[in-house]
Length: 437
Ligand SMILES: *Cc1c(COP(=O)(O)O)cnc(C)c1O
Ligand code: SF4
Image (cartoon, rainbow, N blue to C red; front, side):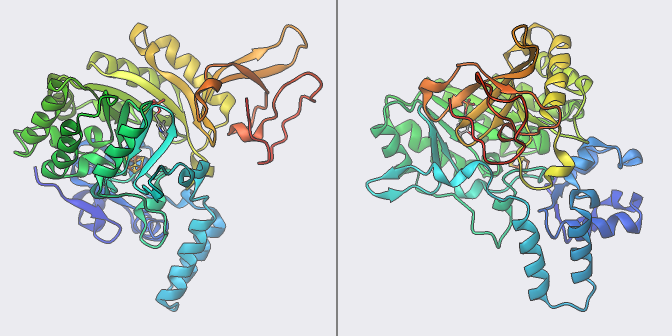
């Protein structure tokens, strides 16, 4: 199968676009000038039910919709694209709307490692034992998710790209920081790289002989968005990828693909199941993660079906994330109280092997905040969220439960106030409170 991508300009080439009324196409044109839009023929042919596209979760995952902008933003965009405004005015409006959408959640740019005075801008070192590497050829995806918190990386005019080619500097940094035992290739999606590009990076790691490096991860949506990456009968390059995975595990590393799946429909067809099988045959593990997102997977049945199917296919459920405060956040966000209920119901129904999942988790400034439960205190009769850091910048602060005052509408931890003796049981619901434990 040939790999055809459709961006905001050429998506009208998709055969199924005939189903869409002109009004919907216009919405796509308007909204996709703000939210990066890219899809491909696997997503449109295998994953979307075009008869019911308006309700289809994968359509919403991939295609920009009017409601993803505020009414005001949509109007401004519509007006400036009426044919009577200059390119510059259009660009300005796009830029301003993007800036209203919180393009830097959780201070991504503050974790850049430094080697001999040089900032390694293609990497992030936030947690003691793991470094993130953003290979420059992997800073796109086979298709783009409408909710993506890395969306600024896909736009040309925001100066937020971080990536670099010099793996050798990263290797030297790992060598000098003995606590690091793991490297995570991320993006975008590192699996959009050609096998030869990926092999170059991996060989450098394998040949470096850095003793403290034990685990290699690839964060990827490719299993769901382009499974042909792992299917030699469709794509001859797949053999090179599978052989590379085999080489990594044969060299004594633990290799894990961090597979991004948002909905059980992504796991239904034979192509994706064969891809999962082929990956696992190389000795690699597949761990799965996804945010919980309104209009896409905001019910426990979808999660239970997703986790059960993942387990049956040999994958390991790993993280359930809370959607970050960025992009079309109003459209996608769900109150934490509701998120927790969905999680609780889903995990009860999912069986033994789904218990490996950590969730729900918020990736916040200081670390990953894990919601452990909603507690009715037998002591003061008030309701609390019990939480802990599953990851903290300072590892000594991990796995130490604490309480936050409950609020039914809060969508992020910084809208809650910390519970301690003497604090009033009201949510501050302002962005000035950061949890520090
Ligand atoms: C989530 C994350 C990791 C990986 O954390 P795990 O809990 O090991 O999956 C590493 N670095 C950053 C910056 C992260 O956000
Ligand atoms: S696959 Fe991941 S990085 Fe790529 S668009 Fe989707 S959420 Fe963003």
